[in-house]
Image (cartoon, rainbow, N blue to C red; front, top):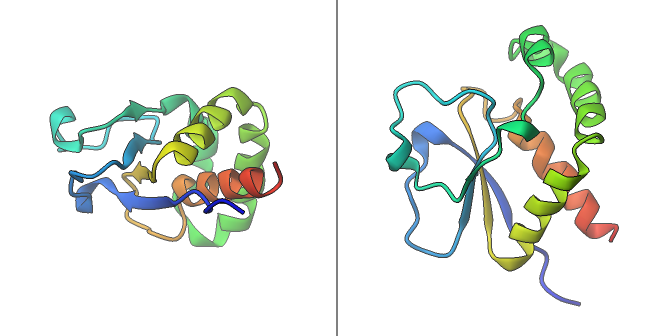
Length: 124
């Protein structure tokens, strides 16, 4: 059995550009404040895979709404199969780092995307 693709999540404000082979993808709809575009050394800005503005505003990073956010966001992601497939392919080729701007490391869209990608890869 081949090695599982390596997918990590990392906050942009703590992300150090790697000199390795990592594929670095920003998964926020809006660019993170105070971060220069060249500083992140991105392979891709996948803003279309980010939560809708309506869902993001509803969630407001409230941990009490996390279960509802996950469910609603997974429903949104179900409509974005092409983008998820592209991210999964990137993860098969090299380690994938999903970058996000939220303060909360456990309750953000990158965590959900990582879970969805890993589930899809395991089930394929």
